[in-house]
Image (cartoon, rainbow over all chains, first blue to last red; front, side, top):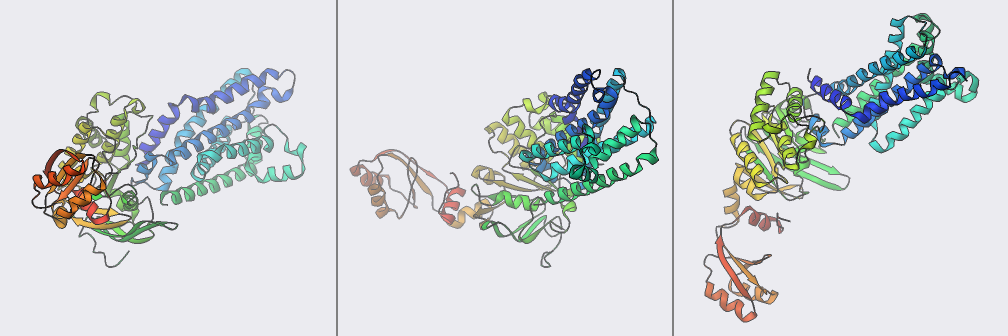
Length: 240
Length: 314
């Protein structure tokens, strides 16, 4: 598999870059540690309530880091050289996505490990929790791929802010039902609220697959659409 | 694909290939045929359209007109097969800064489908030839500019391509590194088809089997270095290095020798026999101090000047 060498290179870029690891793993961990200190005053700050939202925050950071790397790479002479190799757009997309999946797995293990250490109670089936979290991670990685293929470096910060706000107002820290109105309608059409609902339900409430199936379909649908967008965009950028 | 292209007869063939960016025509209907194993050079000043041509041939830019084939594969219809046959050394240094030299070479070898053992053998050979063996395991971000350039070129050579595009390969390199690369590229003749773009006259003159001189997106002359030089004149050039040279003095000299070109250090006189006494008699009364005179042969720069009215060295 020709793209394996590129995936290996991207893997090294991710794991040899302290700044990238700092914002993708370090920042969510710091946020969890700081916010849980307020847990004895407010229930929303307990590790159990916080961890699912923090995991999603970590995935947003991962998406941002991935999109920045790809967008910066696209403007480099190295990338032009890589495009002259006999490799398809789908191989490029895979080679840029796979290393970030490894970071997502580490993020999940670290955040859940710390969460459990601090008192997080996982009530649901662990296998199902892993499946749901992985699907959500794949969605955010696909989104990073699409944004990085589509946008130059400068406007990426704006796109990141939008995704972060949508994740927060999609239910990570604000209850959509409590906000109501247009926010609730838009929130329910986007995948972010479904991602949080699914992860909370299986993790904290012990829900089964049936109970989160609708949420998972939403996420899966958006993931497939985002991967398609990334592939189409990438293919177009390969030959200008 | 254009039906008039005969597949496989040439390693690289372009037929009326063009590229426009808005109103600007970067490449204007270029026709080229490069034989298998030939070292062919595109020579021209910056902005002449050399890099745009290479980008179209390596399937990075879509032509706005015409087409080309590489090893019989049409760049429009079958880019993947084209990419299997080629390797490109871009004008800019194109390396992965987070990796070491071995890893960079392994990346390109892997992307071109080379096996691990072959990749290692070729990498080792290239690192040696380009003088990078001692630093091969250091991250390349710590390399000097020259070392990065050499690695960038090695990354194009590692896959042992059928057709190699070298876009200004020695730009900014010191003479020693330049010579090492020239030697290696010259050694590829006969086996690898090389399309070399350069604005260094010596590079094209020393390496190329044939040269196409390109200016403002068009080919203005094509032939072997010898053919190009003899096409404008067999008349030798006398270089006169002088101080206080005025326009009047140059005009006076033109009364004796019709072809006189002012240069930075004096004038060049193109004539079969230049009499030094005549020169002295003409220039001295006009306050000109002649420092030295010598004869030289016609260069590719003269060819370019003759064809375009411009100098390559700018």
